[in-house]
Amino acid sequence: MTTQRFRGPALPDGEARDLYVVDGHVTLEAVAGAETAAEGWIVPGLVDAHCHLGLDEHGAVDEETTERQALADRDAGSLLLRDCGSPADTRWVQERDDLPRLVRCGRHLARTRRYIRNFAHEIEPDELPAYVAREAEAGDGWVKLVGDWISRDDGDLAPSFPAEAFAAGIATAHEHGARVTAHCFGETVLPWLVDAGIDCIEHGTGLTLDLVETMAARGTALVPTAHQLNNFPMYAAQGAERFPAYADHMLDLHARRRETIMAAYEAGVPIYAGTDAGGVLPHGLIADEVAELASYGMPAEYALGAASWRAREWLGWNATLEEGAPADFVVYPRDPRQDLSVLREPTAVVLRGQVV
Ligand SMILES: [Zn+2]
Image 1 (cartoon, rainbow, N blue to C red):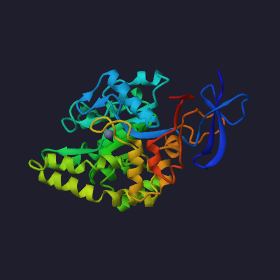
Image 2 (image 1 turned 60 degrees about the vertical axis):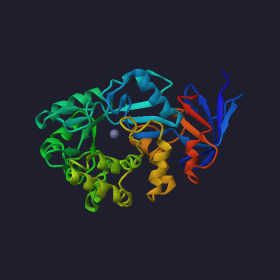
Image 3 (image 1 turned 135 degrees about the vertical axis):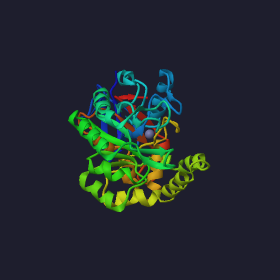
Image 4 (image 1 turned 90 degrees about the horizontal axis):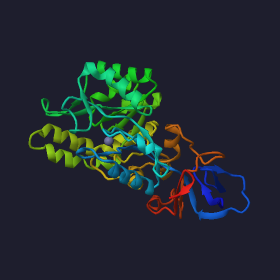
């Protein structure tokens, strides 16, 4: 088989290179007789750092639907997915060479009747460490907690568990070598989780100036799912009649979302791009998420790195297309740092050395 060559400036440094693909890996050493497969701006495989495979708004879906979700992500250039909680067993995806690489969090851990039906293991505080241990063993190094959700008793967002239960759960995950992340919309739960040493916060609309400083100092990551935050007015409207305080709270968090996320960025909190696909949103929207982050005021290069080289490194993969790196990359006709809309029109998507 003829060796394929990809030519052009490779990000993040933007230096012009010839990349040759041999046995699914990149080599920079010229291979005689290689044919140019694509030319353009070459970006390390995109990362969707918060999506859900095998899940729709009603719960687990069948394998055919899961496959369609994964293919939509792949064709959008997302070649590494951090699944942020799924009730489906999606381990089979990892055996398929034509589907994106997958880092699974296992199933969401939520309080009894305090999350979307059919999504989570719904448990009580004393059960949290045992369930965390189980999901840590079943997943790929991550555990997903539901930090807060509407409490029908309070009529507002409220933490899912007491602070001590969260702390015990996070400690258990770390003992099992897993990192922990949590869904958080409101303010109250965030200092509990950050103080307990959580590794990442999802959404994070309730972050305060003090707390982003602490997160930056500790290296706690943030995946804002900016595109998903645009749905807050819809969630507010759905709850407005029965839970007016909740609705007002969601609208306030929504109104402040740009300031909040940019305060985290300014403080130096590492931010990664996640679409929150599955559940409500469709798969394949990584370009929209990057554009949305940039629209908050992050430099285009930072927003792109949040969905590529920085996120890859964070998840334990090669950040750059160096000698011997897996040949997972996307070729674009223009420099995406100058024009992020080009992320919607890849010239070539290369996964495990195959143009897909
Ligand atoms: Zn999610």
